[in-house]
Image (cartoon, rainbow, N blue to C red):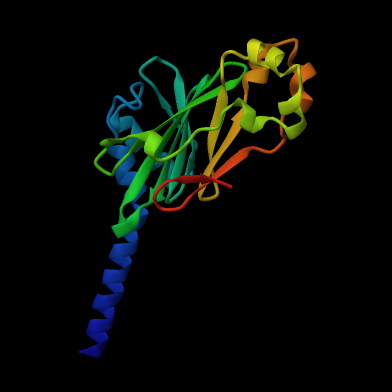
Length: 210
């Protein structure tokens, strides 16, 4: 009897772990097509089948090009949707065993520009302003530059604010990319910027800057 109970308990634990491990998988398959419009649910399933088989996870997208999943773990995945686009999907734990879904869409055109959106497990949008205060230009600058008379010159040439975002260790990392957009004057301003990314950690309710 004890042996039978032990087997049942072991199976229950295994089942729970399996469900947890498949959480991202299920959410990805059920993702609304509007979030990744160039790929169907069937093609998203193909990605996972290829990853499970240890094969290169490439599929043909609706535009006739190739998309490739490069990362898949229990809490995050990355898909190169095209040669000029990338999508990251990251789970951040909430209380009561639920997760918040963070989608990072990045356009790559010589420089990277990212946009973030957030959802609950039913894919209902969550207001990002309640979750994170995004970095601004001054956050990327070294302290001495903030007092420089030439700062207005940079701000005028960098009217378009571009920054890339990637998933970090339990949080998000931001990098300023407008320098690449500025062009030939970029080297003039490069030393004005901090070399390290701006890092946020997730505290279970919102993102806080380190």
